Length: 310
Image (cartoon, rainbow, N blue to C red):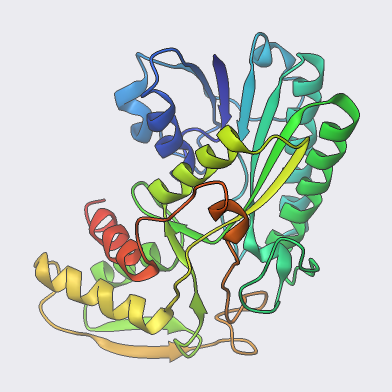
């Protein structure tokens, strides 16, 4: 099978490429402009993949020739970004990818969306919950979902949309763990924390995330399949900070616990558009056989250990 991964040199993308290559029958194409991804993440696989350092603006049809399945991960990964330019760029990129899928008769497209499409919703949020994003990031993902749904319905492409919890682990270059580690490397005496530290969310290891997407891909057969992907457990920001400190002391990167300095915050979140508390209902995917191996806290500790290596 010929598979194409957009954003394949990024965090989730590079881990996905590694997983796809475990099947020797897979022919993998990666497109990434390296604006957020890093070539070093796919360096071990460059002799096994077809890699194009390119953005997805303009005509990209020729890269999709003969492709059976597309994993569309390319997007701005920064949840805090409030730029309308980013909204329109990610929307244009998704439209271009879908046009290329249509023109080359691609069978499947798998799209990584986000739990942020729900906004401040009820806890244990099901896929049927009303979508009311409160950030540009969430609005962008929801708009892209609509495009995926539209093209899949019109052109008989099988679509898989994954509303992800906070994904963490190897090769992550954004998010609270990455920020905390780098802040402490720069100043080990103080750790600045956005908000009051009680923001509580579900964290999923990148390996569990990819396994969950594979479960859906292998078992869900509707034209358009939408799944939440997370854990049944939560962790708050202060607990993450304490785990980062503990692991950095163990690794002898800092000597002692720093002072925690809580700053900013907006209506209970860390910044304007941040969601105070998130927990997804993953029962729909569980019924197909998905079971995360790691709890949120275990995923956090594993991700911290990976991040301090960078």
